[in-house]
Amino acid sequence: MSAIGMDLNRFILEEERKYPKATGSLTIALTAITSAAKIIAAHVRMAGLADVLGATGLTNVQGEEVQKLDELSNRILVQHLSDSGQFYALASEEMEEPLYPEKGKNGKYVIAFDPLDGSSNIDVNVSIGTIFSIHKKVSGTIDDFLQEGEKQVAAGYIIYGSSTVLVYSTGNGVNGFTLDPSVGLFLLSHPDMNIPGRGKIYSINEGYYKRWDDSLRSKVDSFKERGYSLRYIGSMVSDVHRTLIKGGIFAYPADSKSPSGKLRLLYEASPMAYLVEHAGGKASNGVTDILKVKPEKLHQRVPVFLGSREDIEEMINHND
Image 1 (cartoon, one colour):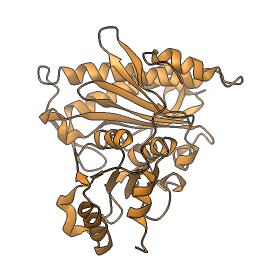
Image 2 (image 1 turned 120 degrees about the vertical axis):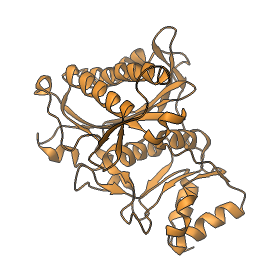
Image 3 (image 1 turned 30 degrees about the vertical axis):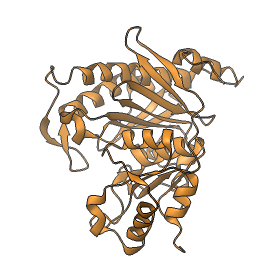
Image 4 (image 1 turned 90 degrees about the vertical axis):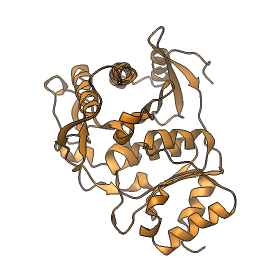
């Protein structure tokens, strides 16, 4: 196990050395993400003083109101990821179509990202975050983004809260790094993250209780009767971060208003499922493993159940 306090860049380089055929491309790619995250974190800290709060007056491809900080975060990420030269194409939750950077013509990877998850929490100073998912470039077409989640080469998120924490995996464990603003470095703070087999928390928006089917209502009632506590922030990054550390259930199910679910497969569900499963947990759309779902379009939505393995297996077991 790596030592607490190890610098993220050194950690990434030491991981790279385990693979003799590594070219360093993924290392540069991850470094570009961390650089962008530091700049976004600085803007988040100043959000109440700088003119980055509130809406832009525009709507994104999802039909959602675009917040100023959404737009700024997207622009910062696009700039850093494009300039790195490692990404053949970029897909953002805020953009209708992929972007193909001039400097990325020889890039080995494509990246899908949610620049600022939890937009509704920006103006009330609740934790928000960035989520990213990296796949290898295979065909040089949009199909590169439409690969199953199990084919991701890296995924992670950055949470901007009481501290800024970056959590990521390249398929060899899950590790978390906290930004020390005094030196501008992400330092290892959560090594080898493993989600408990069971938790005592369930995280779901019970305001939609009447929209759920009878089976889901019964399952949630069962967890409540056994003393599980409700903890729901409304920012996926925050809710999943807590679930990774403390165990339990995070769910954003389909309902009568959103029969296909609400969360985006490429930008939210797939990368979070990758992290949870590599930390020993389980992720499902209610029928199958999220990582086995082959996307059909860039902005596809999907129901999500993820967290402690035993809790999720019980949650999605339709025979109970």
